[in-house]
Figure 1 (cartoon, helix red, strand yellow):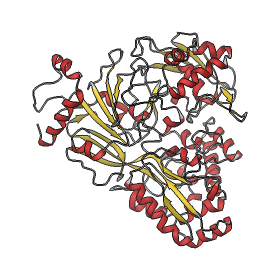
Figure 2 (cartoon, one colour; figure 1 turned 135 degrees about the horizontal axis):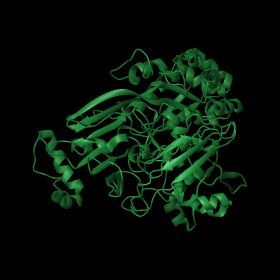
Figure 3 (cartoon, helix red, strand yellow; figure 1 turned 180 degrees about the vertical axis):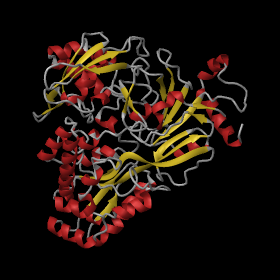
Figure 4 (spheres, one colour; figure 1 turned 30 degrees about the vertical axis):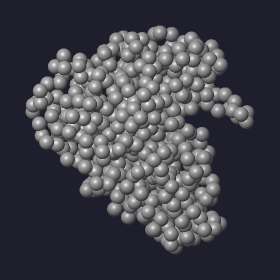
Length: 581
């Protein structure tokens, strides 16, 4: 056993606790040797772990997508290339040919062997709940008489395009029919990992019958009761994990969640697929004492923002920096100091975008083309897309650090001694350096920039007027985010979207988004993307900076560790990890 592994092994023994007796009997814990398989692997991420339901507004910027892809499985998952990969363990999906003209119809069939960890079979009702929650179809009147969604869902493009989900209660089959003319291009990404929550748990807690029945009958009162549980019933509270509520549809299930933020996943003995290679995974979210956990040897896999932690100890780990599919950006409010587009342009003109890319945007790498190859001049088209060149033309007019132009834009806005408060989830050394660089560059233009980050920061602070801008990734997520699909980026600036924290509104942009999501024609995608970016650079609801750099590290001796620079993070295949000490 290597010296750097001894502390790690001691930590493992304390972590496995209750597992140890059974593991010894099964031969999982053996005498220390070069070939000893470690029975528990520690995984560190930089999104906060706050909820089991990553589909709520709070869940959208939480670590649920990284913590639970092998706990709450679905029809697909986001693979390392950024695209959805079909998951036949959960079910299959096929387009129904010869249906009504201009209507997309998909036939879903869930795996006959699939059951939740409480023994209840998965069913089409799980898909009905996902659609009901994420479509925005079901509304209620708020205190001011306005219609608002019953489900407090984050933005999930495509679900609002579904007309109905035909489902017989308890059946493994479902037919999903889209609205006429709304052939959602990326339909294969729907009902994916972490999006399909157990319907039977929600309906039992709400005291109502089948979700399929109440939806079909139009019983809004019953749907509202289900929504109340869906919104709040799966929040993670330290030392209060009820296995009868937090049921699993994957190779792992949740065993515990501690005050210190340690989420313990253990093997789900009801899982019908390949047995997980390691019986226990401990996930450390943002807020855990990163340096102490790593120094103690508790962490074997790291997936965090590059240079976000100063003096990151990496002894015994193989680390790689890489560009991700998340867009580092400033999301701006459209009220207060930024009520004028001229003022928003002023910040873009003085922000040193090229310097930021040079200094913090590509640590130890600079590809000639593609992701991470330069300052990012598009919000909705990735740098490795053939459409990036035409779509990025307008962004090239904002290299940054242009004090005279910024001064002129401030004057045009009518703002007097403007102060811009930039928030992000702290601590984060790279983002702190970013805000300081912007403050230094924009000060001479008469713009005071303040760092108002905190360890409890959430992008909803922009909605509440507590900050003027959010510094984060795609859809304002702090940690891993993005994919090859542009739906989340498009939706983050669409009117009414739950992730449109700056409340940007432009009817033409909304029309463009709706068409981009449903028209696969290459020429249409190109023309619309170019038009959208020209509009966005004119209105400036956000300022793209660069592709978020990530640090991914795997312990020496860990097999099957494959970086995934998307919202899924390195844990996308955690059930295949094997660590030898």
